[in-house]
Length: 531
Ligand code: GDP
Image 1 (spheres, rainbow, N blue to C red):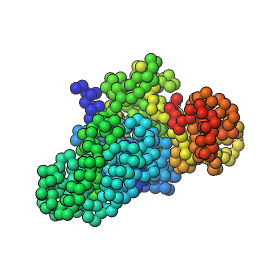
Image 2 (image 1 turned 45 degrees about the vertical axis):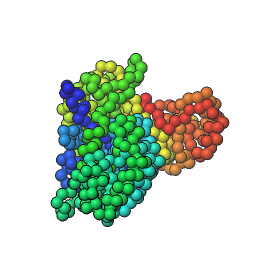
Image 3 (image 1 turned 180 degrees about the vertical axis):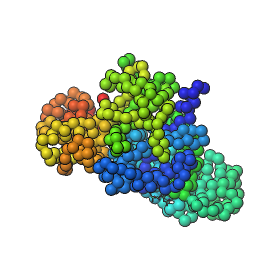
Image 4 (image 1 turned 135 degrees about the vertical axis):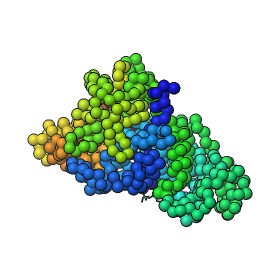
């Protein structure tokens, strides 16, 4: 095995998806503890609220105590290099959250055992489905009363459309939570609240399967329940199947309690064992599309996120680039294909859990930060020889809309420039209605509007505000015989996006449905590839 193969093989690049408050931060922290990346529980949370920031829009973040500038945490575990990409999830939920999922090879889904599948998880799952991203599931907070485990699996199967293969099974819950039974290894793991000393001689007991009478001694009446559940699972459940997991048809499920650090190590061990290493990615080339393998020696990478003002002193922007193939070396000259220029990546940054540091070398699956002086857009591809354009980093139809109000009409040019750049960076989407001179802003999460205004003021010296508009969604008009007629007859509700592509502005979903009956040969989409 050559060095490139070895480096690819040992890498795991993933993100955690969950609904706010399910325990993503807590779990992240425990994972980082195992990786030795942090030494203190609470460090991730603390970082959220005490991070120093001077620019205005980071003040927005500080006021709300949330992290807009989430990034990448790198740590190693048992010889594996792990890149954990953060998915902003509270009020800072944005298109970035979706785009991060297009840059990972697998995800870990956290579900609150009392709440089951929630709205944001469902949305994020849709993005995972676009690329058939493998998903491992952690059902959290078993130390609290929640739904029956069987019900939770049923909830995941029906609401997320993926079969569940439990690898552990809980014994009791809430005050009566005794631990989990490892269905693959036939081991009973007793629950010990974090920070408390165990009074048992051993916390992990190997048994000879579920019929082992030792279980009755160890669990009392719970043993019968465990056997009953196992019987139900044998009848109605799905046995674990690696191929189905890797094809995103099945999710292995673990039960535990993140805050008690219970069930987390098993999850991490299984994750590094089963989760896929860096995967090939589709690219458009001069000769049509092809899959670029991570094992190709020539470096290539794709930009999936741009972050402004991570270093307020320099007012810089950092493009996050996911390495797709080959080795990256400091000082390397790469081709920026969209603008047709070579550039040297002299001071790329690699993201560590505790800080950022300069990169000497990096490998497929790694994320590097490249300084961006306004020439890098989301979806841009860098490579060495062959001209490539990676696909699969789309724009997502916004769900929130505002109309921009410029306070000083003399600043119109600046406003246009600012909005254009912020749009290219993926901070917000900008639409121009065909019939008016308005600027409409669209975002996946409403906080983006505040950020946009603060950045317009901060970086472009433009004072602007915004007002509500009666729009609830957009559809890109991508084709069909009726498209022309549709655009001509519904001009009032049509706008162009940053690339000049036509967009239908949905103010009333029922009206849209009726229109689709009238113009039946039309293709509308809620996602669009970056150009
Ligand atoms: P996030 O919003 O998904 O990042 O969730 P957090 O990690 O911030 O957790 C939300 C809340 O749930 C916090 O108050 C945590 O202390 C709590 N929490 C996390 N894991 C557990 C758990 O295993 N058991 C219990 N009882 N609470 C938990």
